[in-house]
Amino acid sequence: MYITPPLIDFALAPLTATPRARAIAELSAVDWAACGIAGFEEGTFGRWARGQAAAGVSPTFAGETLTGPAAALVNATLSHALDFDDTHFAHIGHPSVAIIAAVLAAKPKDWTAFTEAVLVGFESSIRIGVWLGRDHYQRGFHQTATAGAFGACLGAARAMNLTPDQTQHALGLCASMASGLKAQFGTMGKPLNAGLAARAGLEAAQWAWGGMTGAPDGLDAFGTAIGAERDKAALDGLGATWQVEALSYKFHACCHGLHATLEALSQDTGNAAFDRITIETHPRWMTVCNQPDPQTGLEAKFSYRHVAAMAMLGVSTGDIGSFTDDAAQDAGLVGARSKVDVFVMDDLSETQARVTVERGAKHQVFTHDLAHPQPIEDLDQKLRVKTASLIGQGRSSDLWASRDTHDLDAFITAAFQTTTPQKRASIEG
Image (tube, rainbow, N blue to C red; front, side, top):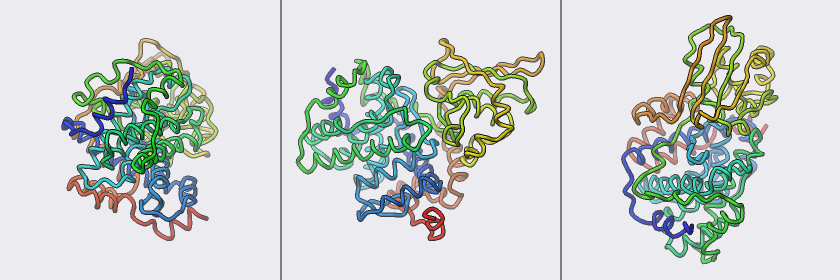
């Protein structure tokens, strides 16, 4: 299936996006910025970001103004650093991190241009991810990095007003750079995958704008080269129906594959003591977030057993500060997670979980499905609470005010304001 022409038509044509799709793009922008700000303030990633300093014209969460591609790399990496950003389960990828970073570095002229370029990038990355197929993910590729790079490229192309020919060349060039492995999960390489995708997508668009040519069928050739399934129905309804409407936000600071389990456990009203917990999940998650005995905070974000222990012992899974190396090795949590079993169940979808909590002779079963849509108003309220907890009420309010007034300059100011000298010193220390 030759998918490049319809994607180019979609990316550059006037959008007829639904109100929910447009609202999702705006909510994601604020959520992305808060995750990036908090990601920089997490010391390890902050030191890395400060090390990228170079002259340029694009702002970053690190308080530096870098070249466009460097800024895209830094901002996408930092916004994925805490693994607290949005997910789309149609292709198991994180749309915001690579795409918003690339689009902002492409310098859209105003809020409408920004959000429409983001929508193009979101929808394209999801559709391309579906086209590449589940086998692509199961083979070990990180869809945020592969499909995300192409989405970032198309989002940047729209923001830069590229011609159809330039956009085709951009996709061809991007095909030589799109990469990223699930083997990086639990390390700093995972968020770096998002950064590399943002940089690849933006650079490909910039190079094409400058006259560089690429393979006209580069995207299709990419699918062939990696042996992807290539779902022929992936582009059905493109431009009329919006996959992005099903975007899922994180309200727990860990892998999204764990969230259905945590939501199911939140229904348990018993005390912290339990004899056994049995978690049933979709088989696909066993290679993603089933690290049985994590030793670091990053590894704990990919562990069913550990987050279940946290939930039962009253440790907040919505607090990024709960996922530390010390917490991963805490005796109480280690003891509790030893009483958690994880099994695969083919009758469950990727968004579902079933959890059984045993206390003596009493066995209680709890279920949850992340696919059930939430009203925009509910998402707005929950995300306001989340962003305030991440970056403080003042800065959070500034971000939401820029969304409410559709002021791109105000959004950029709120997202990338210069970090205090004291904070810089502590990160560089």
